[in-house]
Every structure is written in C-alpha cells, then in structure tokens.
Image (cartoon, helix red, strand yellow):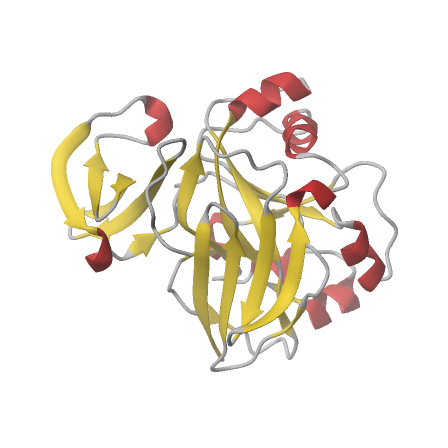
Length: 260
C-alpha cells in the first residue's frame, strides 16, 4: 500500500532516533517529531526526518496489550471452538511488542509458530467502566497487528499466556491512523507474497466499541494501550526465512521477517 496523503485521516507513529523513540506525525515524504504523544495535544518540535530513512518503533508506548480470541466466526470454526457469547480476552506483555521490520523470533520451545492478522485499536484516554458510546469515543486510532502464536503450546496448555507472550509475538505498526472509518476494512495476511488470510472488520462478532467497553469494565485502560480485535480465518505456520505481511485497507502494511 502506498503512502499517499489523505486529508480525511492523520497518520502518527514512533520512530527510532539517537535520542530514543519519538512520536511523529506523517506527512509524506517526511515525518515531523512531536513534543508528546499525539493524544496529548502536542506541538511539532521542528525536528524532521525523511520518511524513506526512518526506522519504525511500535506506534504506541502501551502500558498493556489486550487481545481478543475467536472474534471471527470462521476462525472459531477452524479452531474447532464455539463463538464466545462474551468477548474472550487475554493479555500480551509489553515485552512482546515488535515493530514493523523487526524479526519475529521463533522460540526453541515451539515447532508451530503461526500468524494472525488483526486490526488493533489505540486508546486515547483513561477509561474505566465505559459505555459503548464512551468506548467508541476513546479509540484514538487504529493500526495493523500480528498476534503471533505458538499454536502447539496453545493446544497443549489450553491457556493463551505462554503461547502468545514470547518476545516479538506482538507485531504492531508501522503507524497508527486517526480519522479512518474502521467498521468495514479489508484485513489481509500474506506469507512470502502469498495470501493466507482475508476478512473484513465488519465480520467481527463483537464490535470494537463493544470490546473496549467490555475490557474497561474489567481493567482500567490508559492512553496508548493497544487492543487487538481478533483474526479472520486462514491462520497458519511460519518458518525460518519467511516474510509475513499484515495489510489493512486504509492503514498500510506491517512487514516482519521470521527467524528461528
């Protein structure tokens, strides 16, 4: 997907600099460094980088990543599981976050590491026990996410924590997009250029607003927190040397090499 400008949306992200990761606003062909996180009403510092030269960091310095299981009916079917009546939530640690372009490191403990292409939400304000209307208003932006999973461990243990929490297993980026209608976007995953997953966000069992409201009634969400909303069908294994891409309409392409 190209980086063509769209006046209806704004692209933000974080880039690596000699002074550490910094939030930026993307205006092709450059990125403008911001004084603070984009939801904190920052100003431009005057520091500018060429878009083609930047190294992306994870787009948000999240305090936590909350992910959703079986939120597409066809994925629940391929996993042999029922569609949850309520959102099925689990956590991925901050240490699992992995930026665009950085390698996915396959752990020695697993022989079946799989891709899961997902739309992720970035929260823009503190949220506790919210209604769906309040939750929708608190979604600051959306981004691409790959909920990498050690499937053999997940099947063996039933629980999600170890299978989903290895370092590099929460790929996110390259940037976050604000102002985009994300109710019906195409979600695609390609492995070495071959399409493996294809779905639309309109196929979700539980809407993004419902997910955020539900989670906020369990735990307080903070600005920058990331919520990954579930994956369409077609998940499958990756191997050393592969390149996996998650593309979401209107957002961009998240690309990561795979290494054993």
